[in-house]
Image (cartoon, rainbow, N blue to C red):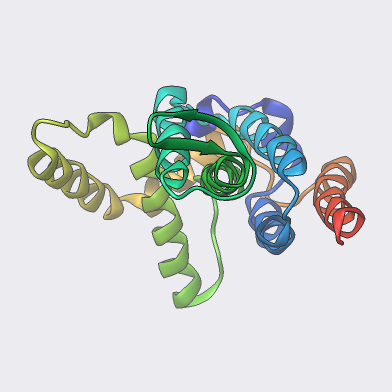
Length: 211
């Protein structure tokens, strides 16, 4: 589980609920952002935070996504021609658009990995269902290495069935994990300040880069 790998300061000072709210508040500013340089900075930042949150980032997987999406956009020329090989034209507009969209998708995954922690608990029946959904998403991301390209359906079924079995004992394991790792039920003042700085920084960068 990612809790075992998460930075101890984060576990002791930032609660799972605060991380979730931070992700919710960051997402609008992130999606509206249109500056490519800022987008690169954001993706690097969220990737770093995801590693601090104990998530294993498979760089080959994310690099493949970026390259694939960018290449598909290059098939539709747009803007200044940077190079031409036979009938293919490499254009600046298509390159920027493809790279921006690819980074946006990857960055959203990083935000979700940071915002959703295994010890997240929300009140009420709806909160329980939402928490299980977030937990399932995190587990799929954590165990996606079990998916086999040669047998995608069979390996996918095995992964989903194992998640279903673990959902039955989720509450018990949650209590054990929280007790063992002493995760913060409430955030400390320093934890709140750090999270606020990160959230506010995204909105400041958005305002500064608005046309």
